[in-house]
Amino acid sequence: MAYTLAEVDRLTTDRFIQGVAEDVVNQNPILALLPVEDVAGTQVTWNRESTSGTLTGQTATFSQIGGAVGESTPSTTQVTATLAQLTDAAKIPVFAIEAKGDINDVETFTHDLKMKALFDTFGTAMWYGDNSSNSNEFDGLHSWVDNTLDTNLDISEGTAALNISNLDQMMSAVRNVTHLVSNRNIHNRMSQAQYLGGTVGSATAQNLNVRFGERLRLYGNSAWVVTDYITQTETDADPPVETGAAHTSVIALNLGGYSVMGSNNVLYAQGPTIIQTANGPYMTEPFRVPGESNIEVHYYWFVGLITPSRRTIGRVRGVTNAAVAV
View 1 (cartoon, rainbow, N blue to C red):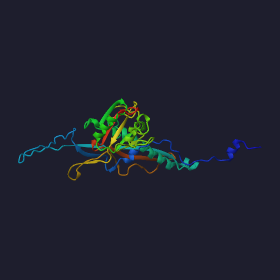
View 2: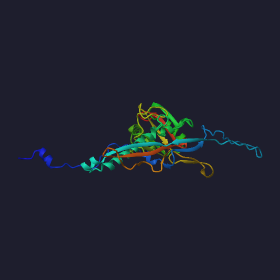
View 3: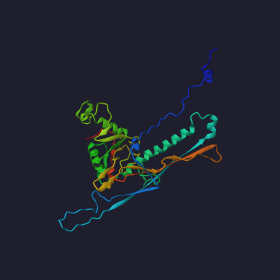
View 4: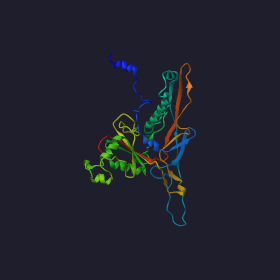
């Protein structure tokens, strides 16, 4: 009698691929571009010029040779940012795993997933963190955009398509933009705008030095970076909230910093920077859970963001997923 399929199943073993296939992939290339500073303590404090678009209380004057020399009064403002505690925990059933056969190294896999969770949560907070609404988190880049210095640092499209004129105006306010950041929708819209009516070899495409089918990599001299953490569901507010509407933002960053004329470059405009404790993300040693056959591990990251110079970040918000306008 021939074997039945059920009998064959009992006598054979299907091929099993070890490991866990990654299915949730959120790209955040800007994370690798932000400089990182290790700090001691729980806060970082710095001084910045007291300004309102012009130097406040610091006005040099013209005078005659031999005339009286006046003195203006320099003024600075002290700014403080607080690190936030980003945490997670895992209970690993050691006895059950050993009894079943740990062919996947569940403990190592769990550690990898938990570290990924820390970076994933940070990826969202990096843009939408708001210490004023949640005292446990740090201020994200949206919260660091400051239009009190220059209204062009924060331009709203009024829930309309991205306007190139507004984008250029905001970039001029930021100064020396190194990176523009958006979600995939707006990146696609910018690529669409490279071709006038889809005509290959059009003046638009030639001016941008692109070939048909190429993706937008540069806008002017600034790299265009795509992140999965800027949503298309933002509210058009200051700062935008991650969900609640159908809009998004384009962010301009100066990640290289720039020097202002002065003796030994004493005036330096530093851009957005990650601050963290010296050991960065870490996990505790596994410890036994009383009354259980589990070990428990805690994961910590004391981290935050600072933007010493307000001229290093700007935003066009209220952008809908529509063809780019001139």
